[in-house]
Image (tube, rainbow, N blue to C red; front, side):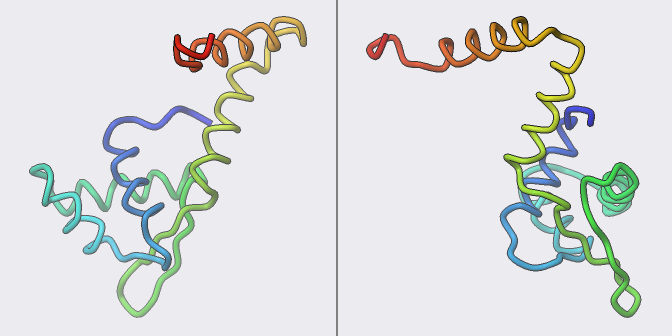
Length: 109
């Protein structure tokens, strides 16, 4: 699973914040409050995310509704697991240990 690009991440943040499937219009309206973005761009991003299996969509009337296929944590866990897939168990452990140590504030070390 590829790491999300900036716009894909922004779109997913909108969807992860919602509790119900969301139409393109609502995603666009929220993103347009923070950046200049075309409706068709949001529609294209959501279509690509659906094709990648990152979002689920269903047609309701004439509008597509989108929702995350999995939680933010699950998506990033899968991404990290795939990135580490070619390493030996010892190398995987070392990478994870290094990341964990880097995330601990200096005062706690």
